[in-house]
Length: 355
Image 1 (cartoon, rainbow, N blue to C red):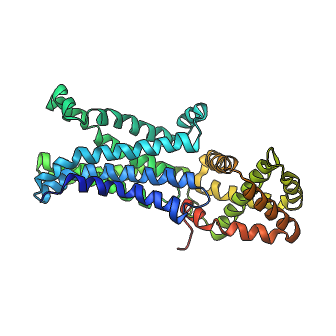
Image 2: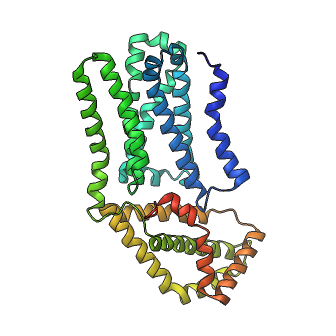
Image 3: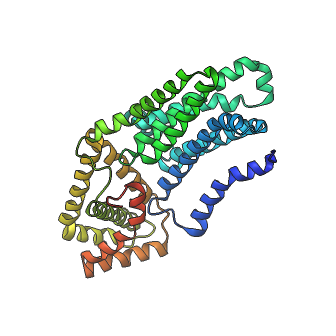
């Protein structure tokens, strides 16, 4: 069975169309759309890496030799999504703040591993033309492109170390990568001993990936966040949004006198906001152990950056002033109602317990 290349290209484009539709039509990227975009693109980069690794087993098991002709195309799509993932992080999330980016690469292991996987993808993308195959020679070209056997596990480790609390989905990808690589062992040696090697490979791969996570989270980690902890997260995010909007709309050219309103609200409800912040900190310490402080700093930095750089307008600042005046007049209940609007976004970031 042969599939037209243009149809494969169209199918590979569908995730980008879906992302554009979610952003421009459905408007359902949540309270932190930048984070949603970065994650979406990263997820699809990993999916394409898994698909590329699955081409050889599918081609041989399904007796579908023509499938091999799409492998380079799929590999380039994996690189395209990885590049978009990286670009959205650098441009949208960090705003070309190279010092902060360098610090995060060194400070956070999951970013270090992700960057290593992306760097290894670069030579594969650059040598994916017929001309480069002739220039390198078939043997050297194939040897170079075996880097994908390392890129797959690195991408899975990047994903696991990023999510930490709920590792079920990344471990599914890890299992698929392990099966694809293990199949190659069986096909190459075609001996019963290879089945043992495959089992051992899958076991130690899963152990290597998940071990650091469980070691960090500790024996009391739940792997999820309770309703009270999620409500605290929602309130903290809403507080950050109101604070950044109030400060932004108070400056020229808007001058909506919103900072004074926020200062009054913060004076009245500062202790309640602090209590929610403490609930949130305890949840992070339980789930992430020694990495809790770094994790909180990373999340708060991204949330604040998103709200601080939100495009302001007269209509937006007028609406924000009305909101702050409503909080000032009606009290905490307004903050509570506003915070509930961020429930879906918070549940995307942290798995709820008892679901």
